Image (cartoon, rainbow, N blue to C red; front, side, top):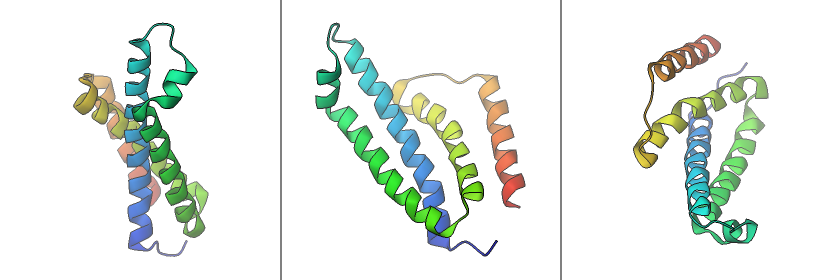
Length: 119
């Protein structure tokens, strides 16, 4: 495989970060929806947090297509595993969730896998 341009590598890291942040926004949307029993799809579609999450996902998708123009999917997709690292960290920061020892073991395995694929 040819060398990956630094800006493309940066986008391969940025895209999972945007997706992870979008996941936190989706969770926040779900919490807001749960706060209004009986509300449904209409309330969700009009929720600014949900709209932000969808916009973020759309932007990340466009960036991802740009990455895939230059990088084989089999290599690029391994970077999506970064979302499994970032979503729980973002959940701690913005949702007050806690992490267990199992999370840190999984984190180590994911990072070892990425290192193995990219070394």
